[in-house]
Length: 245
Figure 1 (cartoon, rainbow, N blue to C red):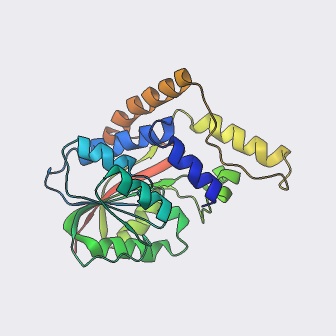
Figure 2 (cartoon, one colour; figure 1 turned 180 degrees about the horizontal axis):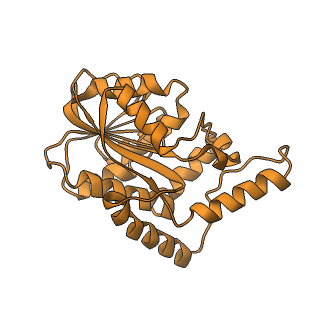
Figure 3 (cartoon, helix red, strand yellow; figure 1 turned 90 degrees about the vertical axis):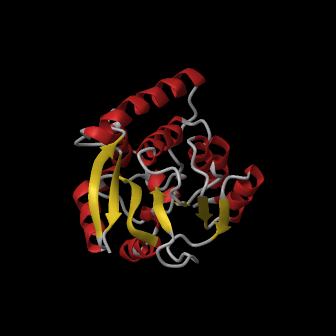
């Protein structure tokens, strides 16, 4: 991840609609699990999700991130036990966690199947993996390049990878359905009409507080549907999977 982008993420992750909406659906999913669950957030950034999980009554929380700056923020905020660590090569023993959360991390890892095997290793049998990734290769944009993404995923492709890593997928859906079509139009337009030589930028655009509140509420409404019936399209895709052995 570019350093300038990382700094921006730390500045906006508490309140920006995208991050707030994603944390909302994750806390809804985790809310069905026992409060004594030991939870690991891989790619925890500055600890915003750990903070929300603590507010929901979970206190056996761990976070890892490859960024020293991110872990420094976690420790300043006293959000769980946090460690500077490569998410694909964890320094934890086998069968340690009840829940492992992977939100927008897998796409950064070149050998994604090896990373899934590692997360399977640290989960207890019957433990849950919650994973979010960007969806659909045709949505590839300069935002992916600034983020150093290796790929985007389809729901069937993510399901196949999880099954190959000895997980049973019990829930999956696309996420952020409402913005799928406008996002598709914008990214296709940019690819067709803008020079590839221009400076690449992320697509976390500044929005006024009213728009930010509206988009956050829209995602929260969608989240209830995503967990129950799901959506056929979306900017992202997620799955909840169980370690079977």
